[in-house]
Image (cartoon, rainbow, N blue to C red; front, side, top):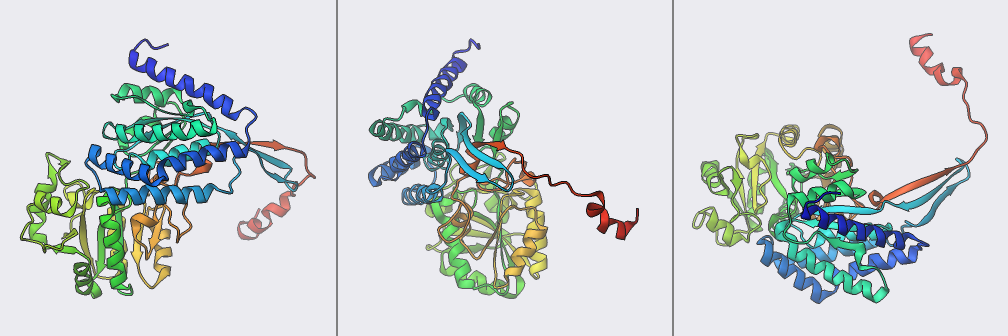
Length: 469
């Protein structure tokens, strides 16, 4: 048993979680799990509490804006609750007479979750709902800036749990002050760890010795081709890029526009508040957006007026500006604009045609953000399929506002989530949106069925015709 007080604190929290989880799973019913998930959902979605937590999140992290966080907390939770409403996560979930296999849903145990400051309420709520829906307890490790928002959320969850007789120890967090030692201990002694945010935390999770689900970095690139509805594309990009001041990993970071419609599209961007800045100001913007190799905290996830002041662009862009598009050509370590910017700034690239745009996107993804997602605005949906065949990405978002679509939307089929797996390209164990099925173990009961053994000839007949015996 570790003697360090930090690890002893975590050990006790996890021990309490194990006790609560064992009781939760004992004689479990789907109704019990569903009721707990709905209690968590109402804890964040109740309008007064939602507004209070959104306000607290902005005040304590300095990131995003209140109105959009209210929307995010509501829609992400509502969408998740819709996704899981009819899902069976308790007891027998399928029986197949043909294979002789009965599948039984089993809880994993105690989930450890590391959550980011960009979404200090919505992301924890998402993880908690998935965890309790599947019969688990969960312990959260919020980022230092996200502690107050996470703590407030848990206090409301506990209040809802009291109404339904659920054990408060099913949902806990590591108390402030957060330390690497506390988080590391949590990673080591829980049954599954889920990590969203810092790639350093993701790497620590994968090397902790505990089964881990981490998600990769975003650096969304979107192509606008010559067949696109330019006004619609500009409006969707503007809505996505400015939502919650670009805190989302699914916010557009680069826009690649084909030459045939470049000027017309720039004009459409201007109509929706997108100010295009020439390459002559690229060095100026880079010099203000990054300081000593790090993103300027005064620019990250700020309102447009604050961003413009921070970048010293007052008088250089229109007063109606909502986001900045910087014309550039460079991609790679020596060209910071080609990476993630966490601000209302997008890099703008010009391509000769679609194939050239796809080439640029491939270079971009291989530089930063491989596996996460790309987008395209086009009337030729076969081009999206071509991108899916050739680019290192797990999602190709077609004709949609990217940050709303990637994590699930009411008008697409992706599951609602705030954590997007990036597959092997992004160094992740999953290539899909994190959702309920990642919080379950499934036991298989296997019975005998009639023998189904092929002959050697039936297997190799086609091969022998090609290669001989």
